[in-house]
Image 1 (cartoon, rainbow, N blue to C red):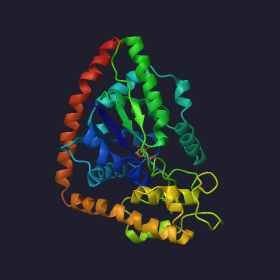
Image 2 (cartoon, rainbow, N blue to C red; image 1 turned 135 degrees about the vertical axis):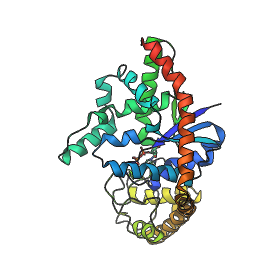
Image 3 (tube, helix red, strand yellow; image 1 turned 90 degrees about the vertical axis):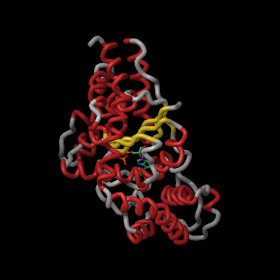
Image 4 (cartoon, rainbow, N blue to C red; image 1 turned 30 degrees about the horizontal axis):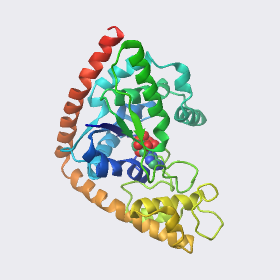
Length: 328
Ligand code: ADP
């Protein structure tokens, strides 16, 4: 059976981008068709300036939201990365296979390192090695597929390179995985800066819709989305990125097609109003389920404990074999 691995980083509150671009597919498709593991990758949250209590709180919230989004522990494995030592164990071995140059070429590293420096902070070494830990997350489980948004494509490519290189040098140890991208909403953009991804790690901004935003907050954010000075609603990512983003969000929420939807609107106002309502409706069941789960913290804890145990059982033989292969 195909094995699938993916994760979310608890660096901020989860966004509409995380949901439409990833979690919704995991719940609706991946957990049913494959042996799937979904992980709150909390070690990755330590790569930038962080507050320990906040990371712990956000990890718990992210895990709860994964379940609220429909991941079913009877169908898939939901767990927290730091509960399974194999990720860090394997990451070190892969650091011995990866090169400094290939790490520095990663686009996300360049962007995030520049951001840290602009803020006057220093760049943690773990930010540079982050893609190696991500490779370990994937390779430890022998995942065939990694369903991720477009922004992660380069990291999965690196994972493939490391797997192939390790296998060639030390004997076959890893499955070479491939990224799969959603056909809709692969890249939900920031409502205020439509050329930038709607990313939760950015500062709380009016351009980011969070999964736990109240309906009125969602409406306000969508109604204030930046468009352009044109009037006609056309779908053109290049010259009308703001409008294209709204059309894509609306299409992702209602199951339509952005180009066809464009023809149905005569004004930006009407498009925004419908998009806002569509987002509110998509988030409603997730928020309701989240509330129920928060009332039963023991349940979430139990799911994460079982998930970690199952994940450990899957990862350990692969990581042990890699240790032997490399000469330890
Ligand atoms: P980030 O910190 O950028 O929010 P994560 O690394 O936690 O994201 O990503 C979790 C999943 O959500 C990944 O598969 C990622 O590709 C996807 N994702 C994140 N932001 C977006 C977005 N704006 N549009 C589409 N998919 C996204």
